Amino acid sequence: MNEITLTNLLDVAVCAAEAAGNHALKNKHRRSETNEDFAHDIKLVLDVECQKVAEKIISEAFSGHSILGEENAYSAGDDTYEWIIDPIDGTLNFSRGFPYWCCSIAVRRNGQVLAGCVYAPEFGALYTATIESPARLNGEPIQVSETCNLKNALVFTGLPKDFETEHEMHFGKFSRLAGDTKKLRINGAAALDICHVADGIADGFFESGIYIWDFAAGALIAERAGGRFNSFPNADGTHAVLCSNEHLIGGLLAIQNQA
Image 1 (cartoon, helix red, strand yellow):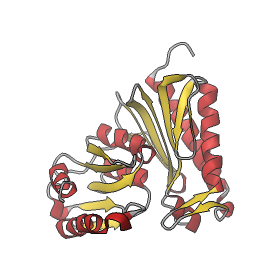
Image 2: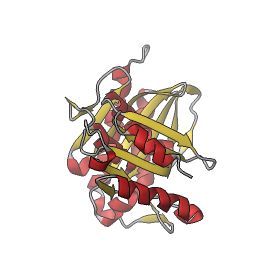
Image 3: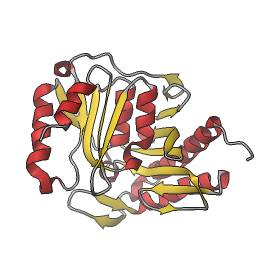
Image 4: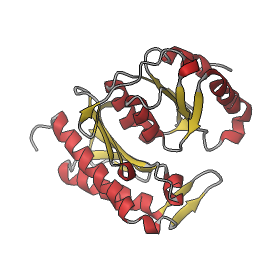
């Protein structure tokens, strides 16, 4: 391919995400095949398989591009373009048969995300965006909510896997969110949560202790839907992220910045 366009990149991202997500869906009967089991998380055989499915499609289209994935990372010689893959976001949900999970794929050039998609197979939902096009759900444009006050807001959130190490800080923010919003929900798949901010189902999202593959695609989709997205790196390589409409971002930032 002589010229790489945003359409090319998005088409490959969609193809890879759908192939990976559908591989997981087709093999749900194998969801108990476990590679590692942690105190607050799990790694499945299908996590690795689904990433390999996505990588194969990306590498066939762009053989020199690099990969940064939850299950693997490598440089193929051209680090200008890097594909960011979360093959199953919401792995624990998937392992228990709870349908709230997705495959998330983004591609960035020199650090800037250009295109991304989030595919939730069990809901038949495909979220897409490029840096120059609107966010879409199954081809139809979407936009964030117009909710103006946190007291009327539905906010999705999550707890980091190591929340015990800073118990008071995490639960202090959780308590503040619960008190200041209409309702707080923990769903267990950050990429899909962010997309639900993009399509106006949720008014905001806040979580700490997540990785770039959890939010790279969703952040672009939310921003192209008119949303605001902020991320704050932690020392361990994770991030604290906030996403909402322009009316609520200040209130969420105030909670994030509390000691």
